Image (cartoon, rainbow, N blue to C red; front, side):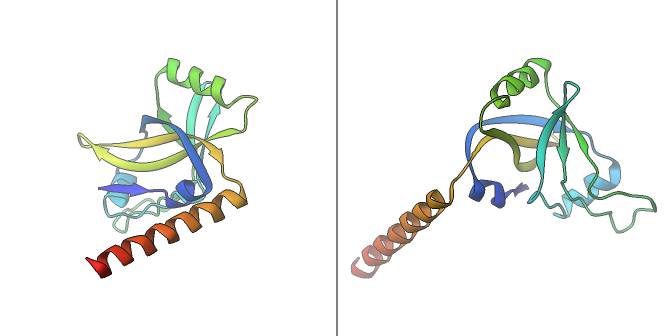
Length: 146
């Protein structure tokens, strides 16, 4: 099971990918396994030498008894010190940011695919839409004649 952040792929050029573990509670794991997570408005920030997933919405698991659960809390990402230092260097002073590209299960643990991203400009988005539309028309013509 892989949950993809389509909004990030639409709004950013992903320059580099990294894999990071994530600290979750039991109810959050069960909620993610049912597919209930929203990465649309989330981003990753490095605070005090540690990476955090901010604004990821994981709704409370239905059978959970925790009454004071916060769905939008910040969650710590598990990365090596060298990876974090490298990301600090790549994001400081440049027009890049860190976004979660997807979340998936690997060896019974959840991993977050972190993307070093550069924002797309509005005209880039229109250009990509035109290219996809053109490609779709070409494929339809080839299917129609084939």
